[in-house]
Image (cartoon, rainbow, N blue to C red; front, side, top):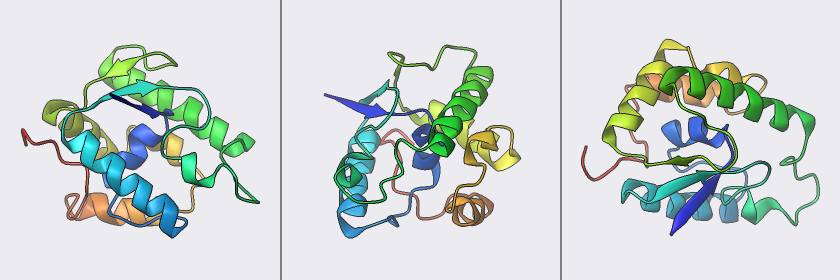
Length: 143
């Protein structure tokens, strides 16, 4: 199978430690993190993805807000510049140890964080990066 992720979730997965908007969101993301750790490929999509799924029926769901779409655009541009490959809708990414190491190095350096602008989780993610990504749930088996 393939995990469908929007571009800014390529950044979020780097620091996911099991915290989320709701219990259903968190449980879903924990399952996705396990699949990513097992090496399941990522299909980049536009708009709501597999991470968003538990929130799609909720009032106040922000997955279609302009600020989230802007995060996707900025994350896409940053990750494309880092990896020197297209990361738009339809792109396929294999989240192996080398991919995650490059992404986490760039995340720690701040060079791919434009997609994190105005995100309520940014302070938590900054702390996780500063800790050396201690406790993150996306860790490929080949790490």
